[in-house]
Image (tube, rainbow, N blue to C red; front, side, top):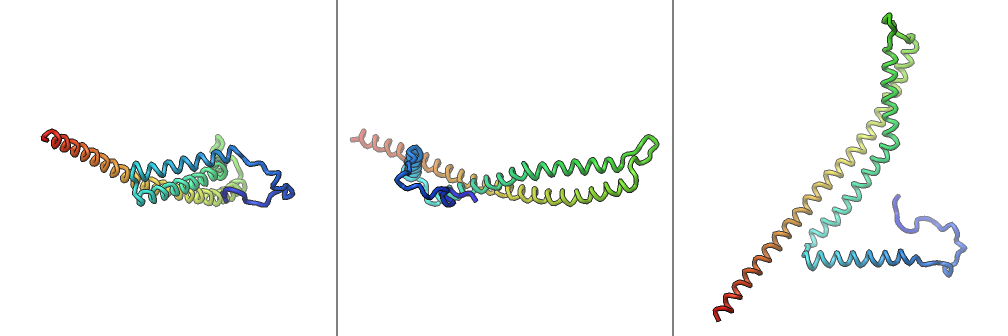
Length: 190
C-alpha cells in the first residue's frame, strides 16, 4: 500500500525526542507548497471566478489521473515481468510446433512419434500458461483503457467549463466597454 508518513514502528525506540533534528528543508517545502496551493485557490475563486461545481470536477479529475496512473503502473509492472514471460512462452511454443513438423530431405519426420507426443504435451502445457498470462494482460489493459476513457471524458468536461468561463469574461469585458462608451457620451453631452 502506498501510504505517506510513518507506517511502521521505529527501529530505534531508544532515541529521545531531544535528539531529534527538524528537517528544515522539508519544512520550507511544506510551507512553500501551502502558500502556492493557497495562491492557486485564491486565483480560482477571485480572479477566474471558478464555480464550486467546477472545483469539485477538478478534484475528481485529479483522482481520475491518480487512478489512471495506478492502473498504468500495474500494466507496466505486468509487462516488465509477466509480459516477458508471455513472449518467451509463445516463442517456445512456436519453436516446438516447428520442431514437431520438421522433416528431412526424404520427407520423413526428424523426430520419433514419442518425441512428437512429448512436444504435444509440452505445447498443451504452454497453451494453458499462455492463456492465463494473456487473460491477465488483457484484464490489466482493459482496466487501463477504461480509466483512459474516463480521463478523456473528464478532461472534456473541464474544457467545457473553461470555454464557458472564457465566454463570460469576453461578455463582461464587452459590456464594460459599452458602459464606458455610454458614460463618455453622457459626459460629452453635459
